[in-house]
Length: 146
Image (cartoon, rainbow, N blue to C red; front, side, top):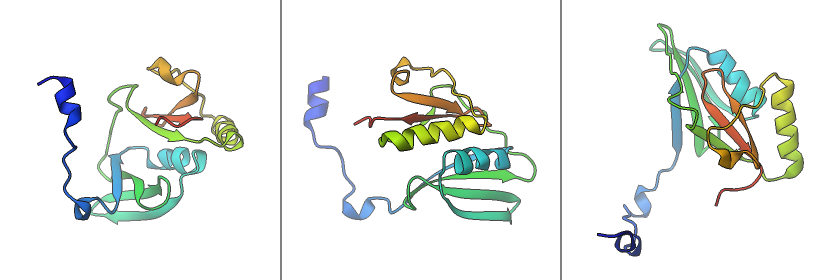
């Protein structure tokens, strides 16, 4: 089968009832307070919920944006290391209002988060890339990707 055959078929669908009502992207960390400072205080993601001592876990959920998609970071009492797999595993935030884009990058840098060189040169002219306390990368891009 060639590529043309694959793109001419409709995408498989589970139907309207199978569309997720909510998406959570969860990741452990050993630096929960530093990660909270980066994502909530630096990037400005709203805190949706927080929990402590739940089966040995502390954690926080942050909106991306709103409540239907959010990030969860957890830390276990016995340790939760989670090194980033590569410099090209990215969370990309599209901030298309020029003043908001500038203010967000100014705040990140004022808080001590220096931009890092992106692995993929695509991001060089259109964004700033930052590395969180665990080494995961976040791109703040001034134009949408699609």
